[in-house]
Amino acid sequence: DAKTTQPTSMDCAEGRAANLPCNHSTISGNEYVYWYRQIHSQGPQYIIHGLKNNETNEMASLIITEDRKSSTLILPHATLRDTAVYYCIVRPSGSSNTGKLIFGQGTTLQVKP
Amino acid sequence: DVKVTQSSRYLVKRTGEKVFLECVQDMDHENMFWYRQDPGLGLRLIYFSYDVKMKEKGDIPEGYSVSREKKERFSLILESASTNQTSMYLCASSTSTGGEQPQHFGDGTRLSIL
Image (cartoon, rainbow over the protein chains, first blue to last red):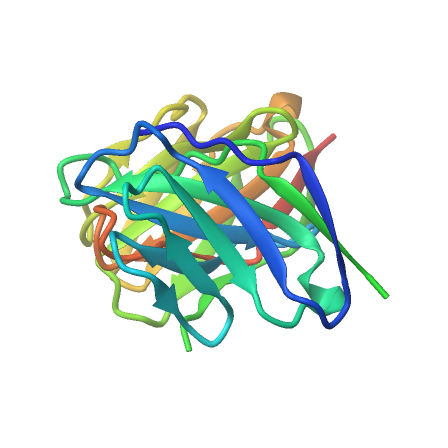
């Protein structure tokens, strides 16, 4: 699976948009970009995923560059409850592998009042 | 809404005990997974199951076994608990092992072996 690179930490003011970047320069054409987050002492929470097009759901938006080498997760109006570690990963399509997820160090997002 | 339920949030057991961790999903997912998560080591796959009564070893199956008698339930068994199995255990489920569909996680069980 392609490797991802994320900043170690970021701060965001409550009520403002949080923009979390992720580099995945070695991504293959069949690999999806995924975002999960993990609030302290809880299980990882799925946020959003995409292949080529930008995606939006009730939690966030995912912007993928045209060359697919990087992406940005946008939380439009961050709240204190969005303070968490955010993981960007890539996963190949198809069911030929175990499906195991591999999380890197992620970005620790601190939302401040 | 997607729901993966793990039977305990916190569990304390003694060395040598047989420990059962239970996971139930209500989404009719074919695939279920058990991971452990340790500081500095990230997520590590212990076992996964792609169908009832089917199981496959992950990266660190030693000391563990699993059971999947019903589609919605996937149990992790520590045959003889040891202190190095103190960890956060996470269950996940999905409709696919491929990237088309996400895995959804439970809240985790923080297991301490004394």
